[in-house]
Image 1: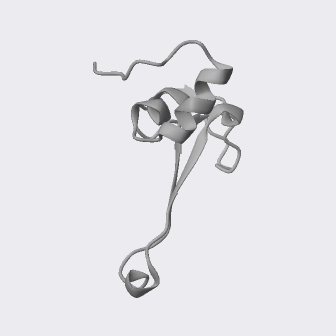
Image 2 (image 1 turned 120 degrees about the vertical axis):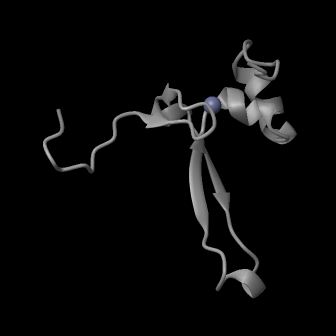
Length: 78
Ligand SMILES: [Zn+2]
């Protein structure tokens, strides 16, 4: 089904649960190494759904999530 361009991605996957999520609802998780380790580690960028963001220790995020969404407060264990 691919036309070979490979550039357009209307939906992204959550890197944790592999669920397709609309880009507008994805958290961008950026991991940037300290300068001392920057030659060994690259800056990584991943995308994460709101449920997984709430399941991580992102309490500051989840506080805001609760304000916008009523579901997904419990961590996903399955
Ligand atoms: Zn997820």
